[in-house]
Image (cartoon, rainbow, N blue to C red; front, top):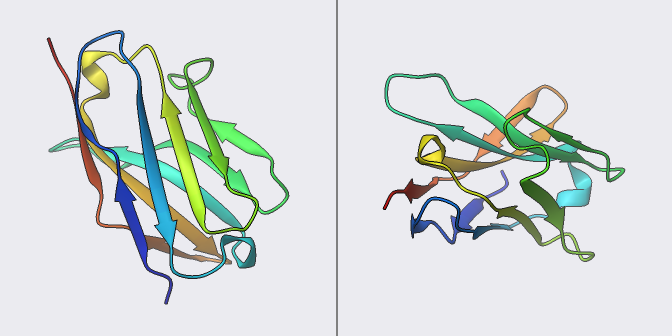
Amino acid sequence: QVQLVESGGGLVQPGGSLALSCAASENIFNYNAMGWYRQVPGKERELVATINVGGMTNYADFAKGRFTISRDGAGNMVYLQMGSLRPEGTAVYYCSARLLTRTYWGQGTHVAVSS
């Protein structure tokens, strides 16, 4: 089904900012919601932020006030703007697309927050 390709990961210093992008092979407005999740070794994948087809956003507590999820008007791209990054933000960040009960995932992009 939909192919999701993340980009923009890399090394950033604590307190810095980083923008992630997710390119979708199908129009994201045909999906119930798009999201960003993150995962560190040995832990479950956790919500970072989601945006539904109506534009309503949802953020994890740690992301509120620091991260912003957005999409382009054409429905091709999803973005995650991250600011005030902390070392505990080091993880693989995954883009997701949900259609009813099924969720599709990108390959992930690694973010390392370190001085």
